[in-house]
Image (cartoon, rainbow, N blue to C red; front, side):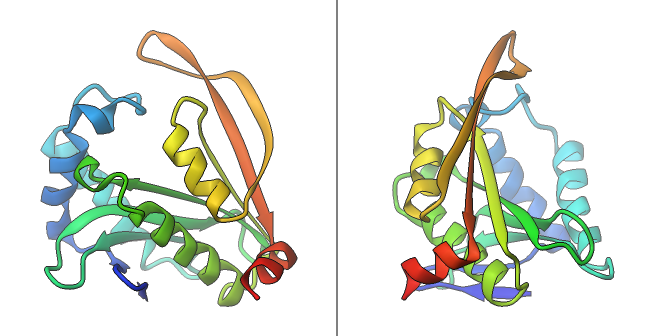
Length: 181
């Protein structure tokens, strides 16, 4: 599975990708918005292994793809679209980037490719996403996609000794098509 954008190639994961994932998931800037306080090689190998296993399922409902730079093949993150049920018309998206590449527009570009794939090739009706309210950059990505804020769940996540609010966004196929034309 491959999706390409002007600056990125999104592709299925391969076994050796775990090393690049471990490198960026070990960065304290990355860890800020996750329950993890550190990542081990074994944890990240299992993390990547789940994405590889999803590639074989029929029907395929989860497309978690490595985000790479085409010129070098460097893996800089991952992004995915996950259909809720077989035959369903709703999915959610998510993405994460190596902090070295934050602020370059790559998350928006990868997320846009996933939403386009979801509406045009998977024939979905609704795509949603959520992020921590404090992750302002992630919320901006979702808003750039034309997603609407549907709600804020107060204290809905608990990790690192505290509660976190989450923001819930979504876009419908007719909204996407109107904005894309």
